[in-house]
Image (cartoon, rainbow over all chains, first blue to last red; front, side, top):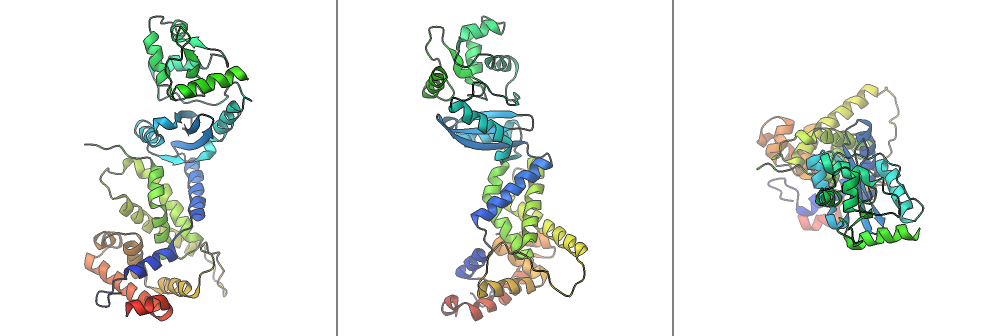
Length: 209
Length: 169
């Protein structure tokens, strides 16, 4: 204590901080309460959580309309959230409740107990031809594959093979929207947003089931 | 250059504990402080997209907390029914020891402006100029309020806290 200025010493300030400090579980309880209140007031524009899977941690994000983003760790989860803040809204909270159904279905998928997803999807991160391609991908059956060329033909633009590749590479909902089921005409993998190991793992999982 | 606003979750991560400290210092360590914290972050989430990019986020949050603490206090006063017995409130801080208890008692006994000045400067980390902006009055007045409050709290430390006695005299 500095008697002339009436300032608190460093030790005393720390003591005051400790005294009024909050335990992690208290802050966690307040956070849960904020998640619920934000959803109730309709201002939780993007809710997210992360789950552990056989292909590493996945970020799941949803608007009120549905699942909007699934991201592999290699995409950089912080960067993905920053991008959602810019493109959708910065009103973003870690709020696992909205992702409960998606998390459960993805768990079941990796356990080999689910062959299709029954989730509301929000495609607003994609537009035009890319969204058209991505919407078609969900029609490729579990355990089946199509070539980029076949997909181009099916969506009615047989010359747009390269654009189909781009649409797959920019799929905002990998795993759930199965861009991993699209291969090169010669049967080789092509690319994958989650890395080729992940693509192989998903295809192997679906062959085994 | 315009920067992109960060996800609100980062604001919560960074400032949750500080805002709770401020609410507890102003309202006491009980559910009213939790209510003020919740109202603060809900209001902040709502306004987040329109906050200017160069704003001081912590000062902005402490300012909202100041208003919400007043709202919570008013709501409690409206609900209050005169009674001879003081209702016991559940503390979310566990069982405080005697020094802590005396410090809380002293903090609560301070005139509101002193208590707020101490909370916003020492716990909220705001410079006195910002504290004055919240409380009204001059920067010097805010500094004096905090100093007066600290003088009272200091007596509690010196009387009750052997660990700091030797060091501070």
